[in-house]
Image 1 (cartoon, rainbow, N blue to C red):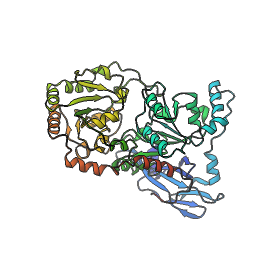
Image 2: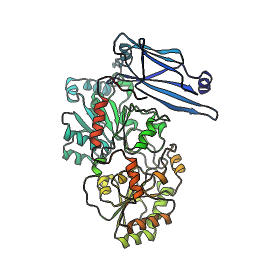
Image 3: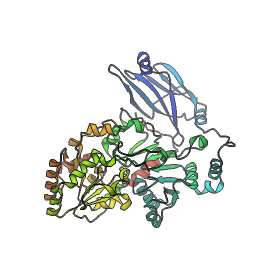
Image 4: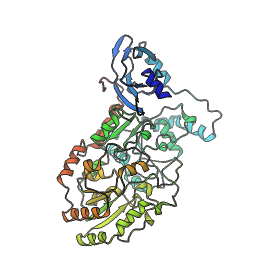
Length: 512
C-alpha cells in the first residue's frame, strides 16, 4: 500500500532526514517518488542552491510501476540565521531549518546512567577520563577481523605508521590471534579486541577503519548505553571487490567512506540503482593490500586453489565476532564433494608430476575450522590463514583456480592466470548467498577461462601449464580495463581520501 500511495501522489511528502556529516557539514535527505523525478528547489534563504551529491535509488519494483528513492546531500547555509529549505513539486517540505538547528538535532543527547550496569558505567567513566581522552585524541582505530589481520586495514595501518607517524593510529585484534605475535614484533600499537581499552578507544576515536563490515565491527557496544557518545566515521576498505548485488546488506551499514578497487564496482554502487551510497561515500583508490602485489617476489611451481565461502554452509552466528558454530553437515555438502572429486581425479596428479607443480588448497577464512579434515589426497597442501599469510602464498603461486572468489582480482592485479571452475550456475550460487546477480559476467569480464565441468578444467589447466603460465593478451587487456590504477599507490590514495573526507571546509563542488 505504501508504494501504491507514492504512485498515486507522484511523490511521498514523508521526508527522511537521517544523516549529518559534521566535518563537511552535509545533510542527507531522502524521499520517494514514482515516474519522472519531481522538480526540486533547494534554498539558502532566497538563494537557489544545488545538491552537493544526488542520486536515485530503486526502492520497489512491481510489474507496472517502479518507486525510486531520491537521495540528496545538501550543504548547510553559510550564515547561521539562514534557513535551508527544500521544495519538491512546488510544495515546501519539512526541511526549513538553520544550520544551528540542524547541528543541534544531530548532537547526541546526554544520558542519565545511574541505573546502568556497573561495567557500563565504569567504561563510560573511563572513556571520558582525561587520560583516555589524551591517549586516544583524534585516534584512528584499525581492525580487520577480531580473529585475524593480514587484510586492507593491516596494510593501510602499516603505511600510515611509516609515512604519517603524526596520526594517532591503533590496531585492534584478539590477543589469541595467530597474527598478534607477528604484529607485536613489528611494532604495531595493539589493543586487545573486546577489552575495556577497546571499548574506550571506540568511544573516543575519530575514525574506524576496517576491511570488514559486520555489525560487531561498527557497533561493538550496546548502543542504548552509549548513544550520547559521538560515533567515529566508519571507513570501509572492503575485503573483496563488490561484484554481486549486495545492496540489501550494504544499505543497512552506516558507511561514511567506502574505498573501491575497480571502475565497474564504483559505478555499480554510485550510479542510480539499488545502493544508498553515492559519490559522497565512494572513492576509487584500489585496495591497500594491492601495493604488496607489485613487490618483486620469487615464484615457485605452485597452483593456488581458493573457492569462495558459502553462506548456506556456515554454522550459526551470534554476531559478536568472527567465530561461528560448527555445521555438522558441511562435509556432506555438494561444495566439498565437487572439490574432493577434482583433487582425487588421477588426471590432476598426473599433470602435477608431468609439469613439476605442487598444489595448495587455501581455505576461505569462513571455512578454516574445517580445512584440516577436508577429504583431499595427501599431495594437496591444505592451508588457511592460521598457517601463515595468504599474501605470501599468492605471491609465490603461478596460477589460481577458483569458483567465484573476488580474490581472483588480486591474482589478476599481479597479471597471473586464473581458471574459474564454476560447476554450478552463477544464478544458483548468488541465490545461495542470499544476494542478487550483479554486473559481473565471468565470460566477458573474468580474468581467465570459465570451466563448467571437470574435463574443461583439466584441459585449460594443462594448456596453461604447458604454456608456462603465461596470461593470454585478452585477459591482460581486461586487467587494464578493470583497474583504475596498477601501481603501488593504493595506500597513498586511500589515506588522501580519508584526509579529504575529513576536510572541515564546506564542499564546493556539485556531484549530481
